Amino acid sequence: MGAFLSDLAVRQRASPSTQKQALNAVVFLLEQGLSRQVGEIDFRRARPRERVPTVLSGEECARLFAEMQGTTRLMAELAYGSGLRLMELLRLRVHHLDLERGQLRVLGGKGDKDRVTVLPARLERALHDHLARLRGLWSSDRGNRAPGVWLPEGLARKYPKAGESWEWQWLFPSRELSVDAASGMQRRHHVSDNAFQQAVKKAAQRAGLNKRVTPHVLRHSFATHLLEGGADIRTVQELLGHASVETTQIYTHVMKKPGLGVRSPLDAGR
Image 1 (cartoon, rainbow, N blue to C red):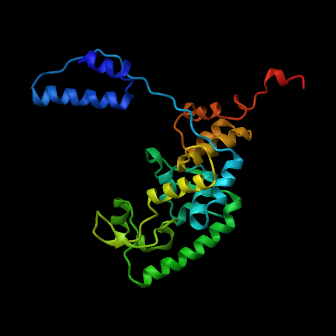
Image 2: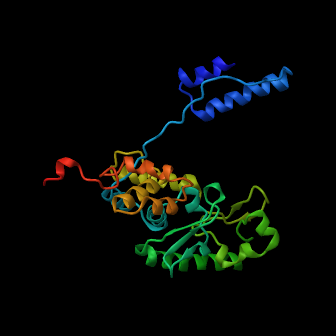
């Protein structure tokens, strides 16, 4: 069994997660299927691969946004301007915005961690207008006696009517009501992840970008552009919500001037 697991890592170049899945499957077969006790297994562990992230230049970001409009463009600009993961963007609620202080609260992000990130001042007017339109939609839902939006289970039990309140509404709701699989209720959900991913992909094609552009590329670009602008790597780490600064350091490999802006010795005499 050790030879099989080592072969996965060495010859087949399997990822750590694939090797771990194979290990669990073999152990389950031996212990549950064949009633054999499994002791210590000696094998070569697969090493995680470091992937260099895809990053857009400032000019490429502008071209991408120019091919989008309305709420979709606002979502893309917010994802880039605040460094949000896809689901962090989609799960934003009205009360996560702090327009007065220029902050955006990300609650229950990756690892169920909360953080505060920057809110682009350039989007302030667009967000004000967007909230005004949302109030109309919210008022319409209340007038039609639609169920409130989904809330985390504990909160829904403690405050059953909170899903109907303004501050808990999705910042980017879907146009139509749909059935909640868990409760069977027909309520308003947030925009689907696939719809936004497709919108970004098609905008990149129209912009003529020769890179594979996904919503996460906007987050990569946010971090890289901050570092290129002289931001401290610890600050960028906090804005991204990374547990370790080593995770943030991957962006130093794709900067225009690697090494946090260090000049080449060839340019020193110029």
